[in-house]
Every structure is written in structure tokens, then in C-alpha cells.
Image (cartoon, rainbow, N blue to C red; front, top):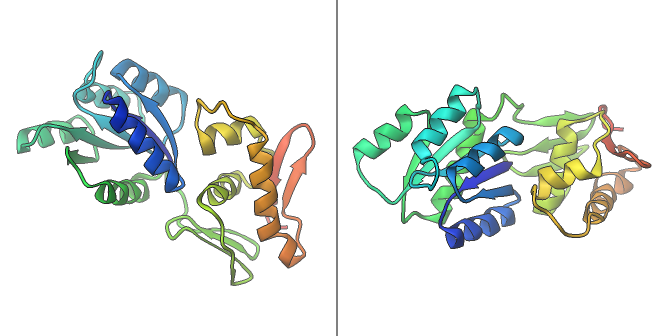
Length: 225
């Protein structure tokens, strides 16, 4: 799941980013309304966590502009305010859900996952390629019915390739989608995770479904290989 957090409280934004990344999500941050609008226009997000009290352009206006532009990402609005009128205004401008500060992190994560399932770009609940099956909702992977244990990041890499099955996906695109748009670490981290995934989904089963296309990227065979 790719998430955009638009929150001007930088410590809270950073804490949310760390926590959601630990859940296997890819998280980008914006600290004001204009930056949030720009990022939402540049990238394809599943869910946007949007604070109402933002500098530049407030959350209500950001939400309304995104909906007017046809952006279908799930939007969860955050506010320090409390009251039915604030909630009503958030929903009237196009938000899908509403959570008042201070909030429970566990509840936030549960709501984000539920929101992604409800508004999630009409993606199939289960991704199947031959006998390789991924269930993003349950975070499970099996091959021939045998369970395969993947870390959160390994699962995110495999899920992204699975949604592009049969296509060659460049390393840079995987970095942007599975890590984040501001990643400045060693890009070879992609190769490390690809190798780990291949060892788990292919080697034990005598398959070669996850291919490295030299100089171009990686491809998951559309038929499971």
C-alpha cells in the first residue's frame, strides 16, 4: 500500500512514516497543502492521510481540489478539532473517513487498511499466477498451497511486481513505489530484496518466475513461471 501523509507537525509526520513503513507500507510526507497537492498529482497513492489545519492550503481545500481533479485515493482526514460540524465538512469535501487527534495508532492503521480495501482502485482481493498466490488483505503468500513467509518489505516488492505481472519493471520504479520518492540510500537494496524473494518463491519449488532483465529491471512471469 502506498500512503501520502500530509501533516505539518513534523514529529508526528515522521513518527507516522516510521510506523506505517514498519507495517510494510510505502510512505511519502508533505508538510503543507501545496506540497501535498503536488505529490498527490505526481504519484498514485492508495490512501492519503490529510491534516485539516495545514499551512498554504488547508485540508478541506486540498481534499476538494483532489476530488475535483478526479483523484480516487482514499482520504482519511486528521484534525485536532472535535465535533460533528468538522466531521461533516470533511466528509462533504470528499473525505472517506475522519479521525480526531489524539488518536490510537492501532485504530489509524486498521482504518487505513479498511479504507484501502473499500476504495482500492478495483484491485482483485487475491493475486494468482499459476500456483503462486498472494493475498494482500491477509498479507499471505503460498505456492502450490505451501505457505511462504515474507518480510513486510519482501511482500511489498512481490506485490508490486505481481500487479505488473508480465511487464519489465525498472529498479528505480520499485524504489519509488516500495520505499519512497525521497529514498537516498543504496539502490542495490532492490537487488537484495529481489534475491531474497526469489529464494523463497522459486528456488524451493524448482521455478524461475521472478526474472532479472539485465539493464532493464525485473519481471514476474504472468503465468507464475
